Length: 293
Image (cartoon, rainbow, N blue to C red; front, side, top):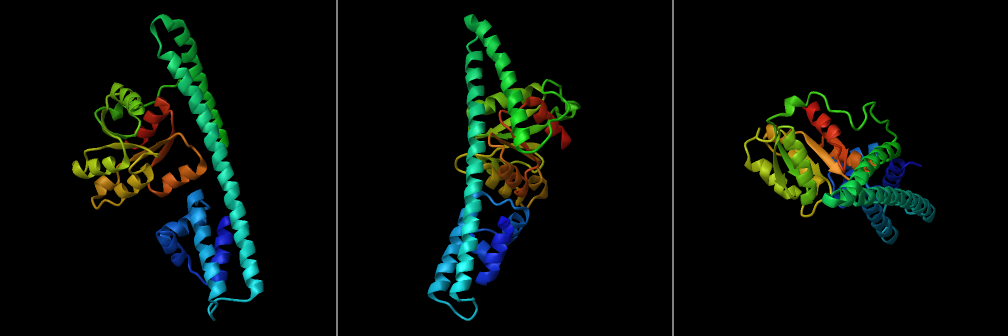
């Protein structure tokens, strides 16, 4: 039984509407409807759903009334369905942990390669070896992530130059990332292509910057996902809800090292326009930005 079907059945048998379930979970009903329909609930949301429904079952067992089927048989069926939901939740958790570990391993390999490459000077020959290793790691990451997501890589190779990036010259970018080194690397790439870059270290700063500037001040926002104070998801939602439609519709490109399908889906749900994997390939980044101009 699918997770969505399980939730719908349990809600029906308990006599609780999905709107009430959403409120108890601290979500907007429309958001929960969409996530249930798309099978895109995160591990944390599924756990919260399970907790809420468990409380409802316990309450009805103690205080059954005429509005809820109270026979022991029906409650046993409900508990069996809850067990099924919990099993699906555990499978989802293990899949997420496996994919996160794979990405962390790849990132560790890449960071090691960069460390040797940055030695430079008398280590030039060794640095050259590791520069080649960086290219290999990037290629492996692209292939691994595309395979995990069931996607096909573009026909262009990573070394290809992005087309039509001249239209990006003079555009202003808000670069949001809590890692200073990540910002420095991306800023250098973007400035070399003629863009103006401003920085923010978390989602709260990004929202404030967008609100404080003129509506058409920023042409793009590059938004990291995992940040302190306010993450990229919440920041994107707040920007999309701004009353000025020019501010609210600034193209937002998500940047993350955790390219699991749930994160990609969640980025789309909160209104992000594209989703790129870190370490970001400059060709793909510029190509993505050019799509919106």
